Image (cartoon, rainbow, N blue to C red; front, side):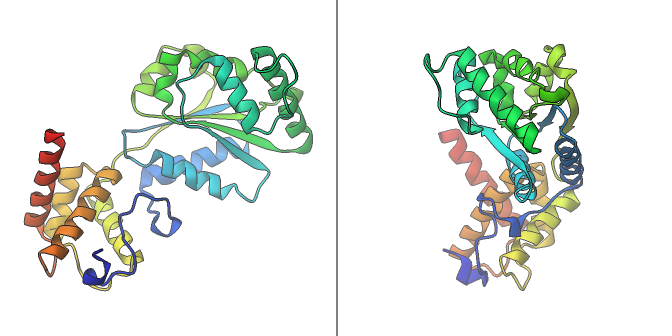
Length: 274
């Protein structure tokens, strides 16, 4: 829509995962390094938390891609609001367990299927990472205890899989209320928003990857973008993308702080109206 006007080859602030546009802050780099350690050493469990829009899912996708050529398989639970029975059935299907025998879909039958797969994985030197997204909801659905009990599966004395809990900040408080699961966590990591310098680097990196050859966001626009978005990548993407749309429509040569403030106010007005 606006690529030709701004002389870009692609939209720089799309939400879709594209490794070309990846930008890692210091806390993201540190968290990725720690998660690699947990998985490579086949530890039982780890936790990744952070506010909404901070980049938790993107980091996990990057982690999964880094292990794509190894004997490690990622299984993701994106809807944690289910019963214990349904969760076990879902996991058994996702890890590739053999077809169920009657009576199907009982807790006992699903556990047998899971145990069979994990024992086979251990024998073959393979490993599974179970990623639970929006894990702050697990406490409400009573699944924290289910997952803790699953961690007791240890063929040949080794963890059968690595559990990665990914969620917003209330997940940390939930762990404090579930000490028996918290003590199984090898590491706990919290992603932090970008600092002002990282916000500028993030925006300029994405523009450069998109083909920008000139200045599009003025320095005061970059500074105000950080203040208004508090360094949250999702908010930065939304604000900058709309600023490019509005700037194109108004035939502006660059985007300055005045335009950023105007676009932000418009977003707030729409949010309030909704």
